Image 1 (tube, one colour):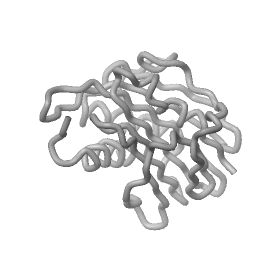
Image 2 (cartoon, helix red, strand yellow):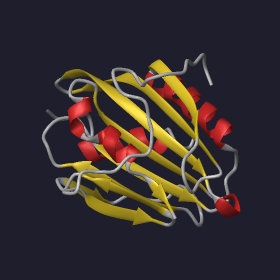
Image 3 (cartoon, rainbow, N blue to C red):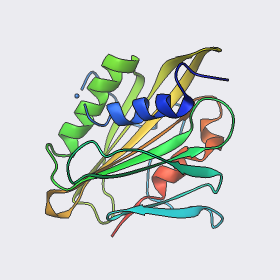
Image 4 (cartoon, one colour):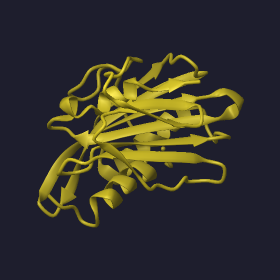
Length: 194
């Protein structure tokens, strides 16, 4: 399956544009088609990755790909699954000086998801996350158009307000069909802050 542009470019657009942007009507509870978010241990076979104070684990078949931070002083990295099909992966950005708190960042993600992708089944949640001053979660589904037809995708974001006014946004994306088997939710749950 190919997407308009390259799969990497589509994933980058989906993951980089959304964290940079603003709340439509939202609900709380479990993500669309998934389980609630809570910190959890990753499978022992998964690889560890870190940027700044944020560490996560991902399946070994998820490979790094080039990504650029969105602002001066930001740190970023991204991983994607090597499997065929629309992009499954994670993107992490750590900003040394946040421009809004967790609630504002969550609102921003929902507004941009709705405006750019037509976000559906939106879920937001305030969380307690070890090592973070505050935390928020956003999940929604959206339809991406590919050369081979439309694909329902699921997006999940973990927003963490860190010490010294820093903020991290960890975003995972995968096709809705098979999302629970993709490992994406487990990657988000594996996030730790040092």
